[in-house]
Length: 161
Image 1 (cartoon, rainbow, N blue to C red):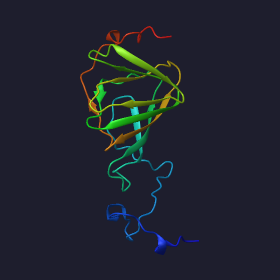
Image 2: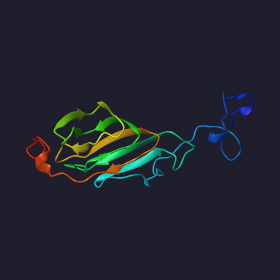
Image 3: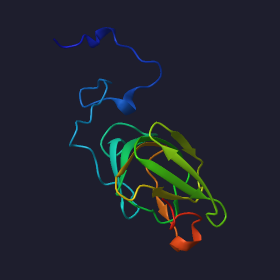
Image 4: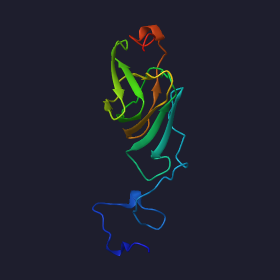
């Protein structure tokens, strides 16, 4: 049964989100058809579920990030984007600070907010299992890779359990 859109009214101008028939409706990205043309850091796979690349979204990127066992990103930041993350599975560490001297550990069920332009290094603490995050950014998935740092500079990284 088709929905009755004749009673469907939005406040404001909905045209930026209208489909080819002029209707504003939810957009579903089916499993397996997610966009992979996102900003990347080597070793992290970012898959877009909701983004400007394949939905009418204008100010939101929402996707899944996967890291292999023992993964460590290059230092990077996300430009003007505010970033929210949720650990679906695995154990994560985020290094930050002037020389990445500080860190926070996260585990399954933890949430994190990373402010705009904050240089950081994302890590999978587990040497044997992958790490999976759900991540959202505004306005979109901006990734600015920075010069690499040596593992030895990251406190408690090399000798982690």
